[in-house]
Image 1 (cartoon, rainbow, N blue to C red):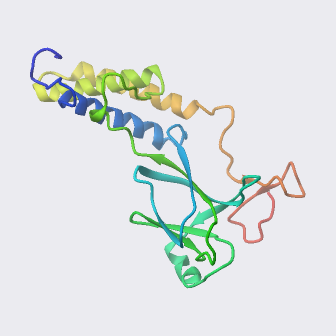
Image 2: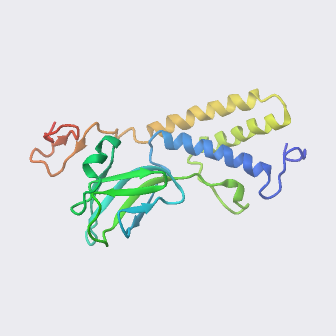
Image 3: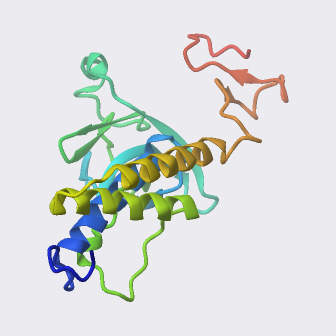
Length: 220
C-alpha cells in the first residue's frame, strides 16, 4: 500500500496523519489506565492569583505549593469544587489551599497576598503530532505491543481509504490493544494503589493510614 499512490507518503502527507492519529489512540490507551507513563512536571511563579495552563496540557495529575525551595518540601493543593467557591472567593492571604481550572486558566484560592511563591504542576501533556515529524524523529510507543497496535491501527485506517477488507487488520489491532492494556494495568502489580493516604508523620506509624474524607483525619 505504500507504493500504490492512493495515500500520500510524502513528508507530512496523509500517511503521517494516519500514523499520528494511531499514535494518539495508543497514547490515550496508556494515559487512561492511570499508569503515569506519559507525564511531565513544570514549576512556575505566578504574578497573581491566576496563571495560564501549559499550551500542551491534556490532564492535571497534581498541583503543589513548594513550601521550601531549598529543601523542596511540597504541600498538596486540592481542586476546588463548584460548591466550595463561596467559601474561598474574596479571601486574600494565608496559605494557598485550592486550585481551580476553568477554560485554560488556573486560579489559586485563597488569593495569594504576596508574590514570589513557587508552584509545581504535574500533568499529562498532549500526544505528539506525528504529522510534523521527520524521518529522524522518534516517538515512544512504550512496548513492542504498543508498536504493533500503532501499525495495525494505521493499517485499518488505510484500508478504509482503499475500501478494501480490513478484517485481518482489525483482528490484529484488537489483539495488541488487549496486550497493551494488560501490560499497562500490570506495570505496578507489585505496588497496588492504596485506598487511603499513608501519613508518615502520624503517631501510629507505620500504621497511620489517613482517610482524607474523614472530618477528624483519624488514622485507619
